Image 1: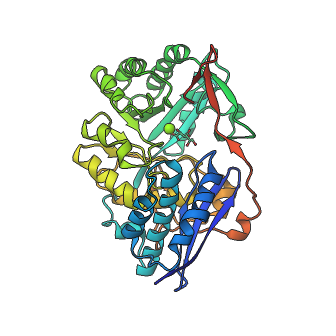
Image 2 (image 1 turned 120 degrees about the horizontal axis):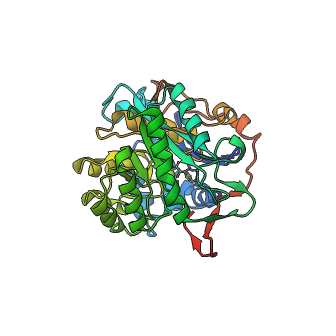
Length: 402
Ligand code: CS2
Ligand code: MG
């Protein structure tokens, strides 16, 4: 079998999504998600100008060799653009291999390690009362694990809370929106949200929270300590993770489980965190961390240290990512949880898929490959619409992590 062509499909059914489609001489094609929120066109160019020309004529079954070629052959290793491009190629090649074998992707990854994949959803509210109602609504949909985010008194916009009850989509049209952040106001408020949720719903529900890189290590330690009686499933991205040692300081002060890694793009971003058991869940996923091939290696390292997976699954990852991730999730031995932000109806129409949700769990389905396709004619009806993620400043104007 030979790769004969490949193309990059950019579509915007509510938000920009980038898909790589690889075609072979035997009529089998594969899809990979190449979406990098706010930097989509950089990945499009990297694929079109520097990757696709090198793929033509290659045997698509040689997944590992192509991965090594694109990683080591680039000379300039790692980084979100490079690894998202490699991730898209890798996912498409695993899709092709599954289709050629007549098997669902999970069967190529060792088969099922569980019957279904526990997922967590996003509940949010402009205030604690609204967030409580949102958690109740998601419990009614069967979710057993729920991420809760709420507005913070004194702050106009905070991460994870949409305006006017719309679905949360952080990227906004035009140049980056500037938001104001106060860790002091947040730290006074966040514990109250989870105290209220535990009082209302008890401890039979997994509660998660995304701090979204906002705190210093000692502030994160303070938050983790304050939340200990509330038995969180995890707090995510408590502090920026470029300095992996920062998590040592948090670990010294709290047993609240820590999750990190949605912005990681290689094993080198998390090797220290995992080997020193500074985290409990690794959030990397197929799109941004080099595809199935590399994510398996991250998960294998994590397994040795009893770190579990918790793949990123926001709506700025396409259904192609969700499909591939669910095949990975149902097979990987040290699975933890899968993020599930349902896509819009328009997005689901552009990306017909075999995966399904039922009563707090998802299943990849048994279609061959990863089970996600793209309706190119429909995709063409939604042209790219430039959008950026926000930036954040402290109240004194200092730029900080959004
Ligand atoms: C978030 C994401 O899902 C999450 O945990 O951190 O919403 C993140 O903000 C976006 O994926 C950024 O594009
Ligand atoms: Mg996050």
